[in-house]
Image (tube, rainbow, N blue to C red):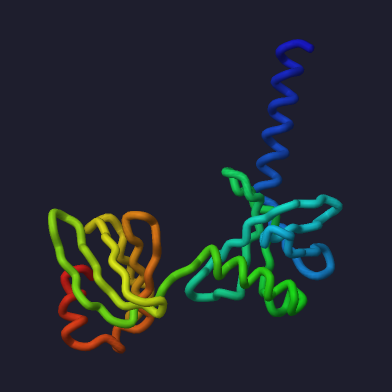
Length: 185
């Protein structure tokens, strides 16, 4: 095989890969079969191919938690296999339950119910809070995008370890708690 033939083969492979990335594949009960594995993961049979394990991701986790669920290969590239437009409309109730469980595991986000204290030292905010899973402490680097306003009343906080915490409704915090938080939002 000469260099020109090799270049043509590489070019064709690149075109195919580009086409695969650009093509939207929608998954539903007609073309995809999901199952829970013995290890508690999810497998998928789609278009004649078996995926022993797949990743389940939200496209819009806070605004539309049941819409546009991305199903991806579990490796480091996380290549998308396809999209489920709506869990309730495009999946059986059993499949929707399995996928919601996977989403819950992936997007475990304790909700902050009370702010006990926040201390600012050397560019880091040290939070001591009470969540729906109990009291905890975490650290956020200031000016790093660790605190994001999702809506007028909803905040997402990501700590140094990548753990996420949510304040679902600022109006439910006391005036004293809001004053502690004001320096950071």
